[in-house]
Length: 418
Image (cartoon, rainbow, N blue to C red; front, top):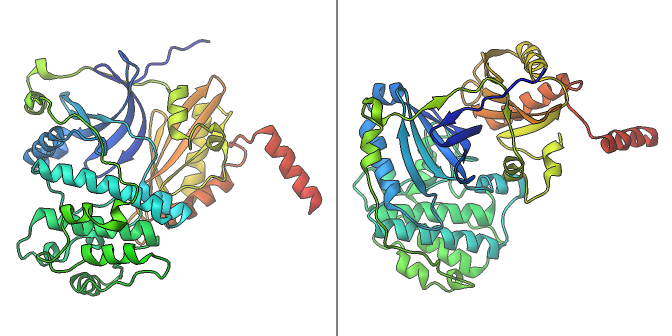
């Protein structure tokens, strides 16, 4: 029997898999059906936004993003609203989290770290020129803590004695540069007071493998006194920074409208975008598969031993509803509550771990008529606990996971040799 599959549509965008989520929003991969262009759509729940009095903050953040048009900053294309949701359409950026790269492969070589740092300084310099300051620059990933990210925050911000946004941002850039070069944080302690003291005194030690030029620049950026801290014009003149430096070329003059920002918060029907709900597992096209892979090598998508930090995937030839049932059967004995909706599941550990209750999101995608891909993502909690959970889950799903024929032969040959 041939059943027609309806994907979820928001206006002219076809929604795909979830690529990130937070307390008030989730981000989905999407495609403009008119142009075929891939985008990322941030979806916020209007009720939550109103309940937590976040309307003005979100309006300000959207308006700020619209001011920024730079090759090293994620672009915002448009904002839409339905009766219950706010949709922010963003540029889709491949490559994943920068610090996942460090977590999986270790620190970077100096020339590679310098390239990333040059792009970061360019972007921050541009934002500052438009009157936009961040004050807590970081990558929402590897080093995220339950109390925010004090590890990246300038001493004057922590001490709350009044500060300049530009110099505070530069401190955060210095912490990021240190992590790229060293592979770990310059200021780290499980005791918050000790951590604050280390940051206030700029109590850090450069690893011995750094060049003198890199050490000198770090010392000038991670200066606890904002009055004597290096400035962006001075960084641009630094010998270590200047090596192989190519400023970005882009068009600065462009028109921007904030009409859609106000429209999304109005409840008039004419401002609402149409939504269509999905009824079957989302079909994944070739572009989406490629966008999830390392380079253009699709092989890693079907490798159950792949490196992962906060998400991983496996493929299965079982029917979608059977996969969902098997995951539920495997998760419950591990102490997880299971919520199901269509072909998505939310698993929550009833017992709180090191960083609260571990929450795991899973979704089944159709890759071909008889082949599904299952994504397993950490939505909340400790990454190491997620790794442990996935290992236990994998052991229970051995009859569900598809293994390519050549891998089966390799496994058989290995067992003969042993």
